[in-house]
Amino acid sequence: MIGGVGPQADRKLGKRRDLVRHQEQNGFYLPRKGANHSIYTNGRKLIPVKRHKRLDRITANEICKQAGIQPIF
Image (cartoon, rainbow, N blue to C red):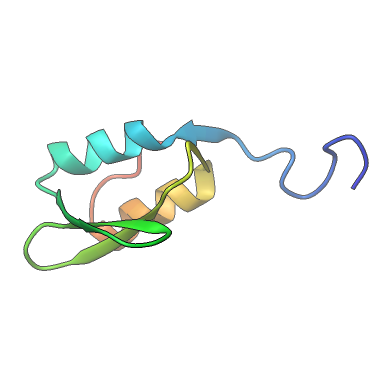
């Protein structure tokens, strides 16, 4: 991979805080933090969210899919 060119270079990135805000607006809250992930729940589902400032679009939409909410990216 030279100069940031590669299979992930064309993926769009979204801000983690936008994903977290979207989850919270849909009834999820943060009961605990793990070593590498924050764990969000709505009382029925536990959804791990990576602790990176930016998430690629595919990962963010998969997290929404796991939560059963509308993808935002």
